Image 1 (cartoon, rainbow, N blue to C red):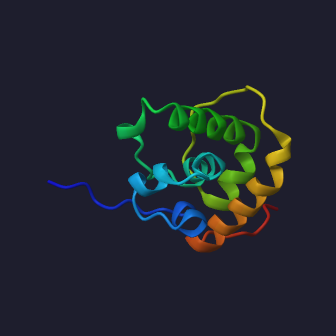
Image 2 (image 1 turned 90 degrees about the horizontal axis):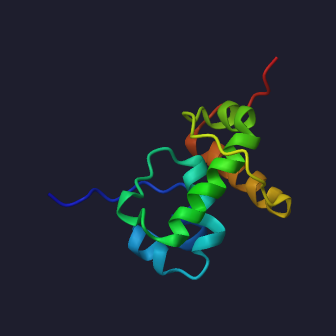
Image 3 (image 1 turned 180 degrees about the vertical axis):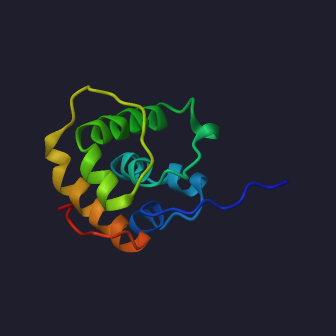
Length: 115
């Protein structure tokens, strides 16, 4: 049985990719994959688990999740990810914020601040 086409939140919008194969062929993959992993709990990377780019993206996503868990949970109602208390590159904060806002708007998540 063929695999269903994954539903991307960011990869299709940012890279024009409709499949993981297209995404992994794109030169900008590293800039977007960690964000897709962070905002898309349905993304299945098992086929790419041995790929160094996928492994690095998973680590980066876990670190950003660990740092901004409350914000991500409130904006996206995302299930928890494994924790990783390693450092994040704060130069990526704007990209993270933009991706989070885009994902929240496209997922229909409530963007109301908690009381």
